[in-house]
Length: 210
Image (tube, rainbow, N blue to C red):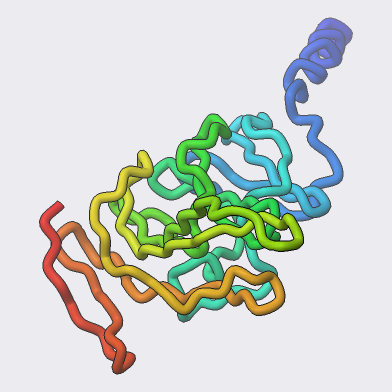
């Protein structure tokens, strides 16, 4: 009987360990909305509670080694996580080399194009971001492409639809040498209120009707 138990245990052990062979992990984050981010080198993936890798390792997920806890934007994200079913990703404008941001869903599919110079994570299904719109103007005397850029701070929903134009933004340089990621001038508070920073650097609470 003892031998039979040992034989059954030896047979079951590989089955119990099946699917858990993810090695070389540098960091494991807490579970959020049923998924936990795991880091290997400079890439991140996501596992479910069973330890299965459900989103493969990729290098475009947003995180910061040094986190700015006083902000609610990109700089406040310590590690990739899903909030309201969305996780922030980053990309790079080809000619300018400037980082832009968007979101993926829990399948790892892109749902909001990386067209934002700064973003918040979602709250109650809404996020604030600075949308950059790029349009081709022509070529200069050196046959280099010239573009026009427009900037708008907006409130978006989890599908990427713009729910509110908060304000138009200017004074943003898209030259790689002079570019600085612009700060957000608005904070989503609730479905009924939004905080907007004035030119005097004070905040004003405005009503929302979402």
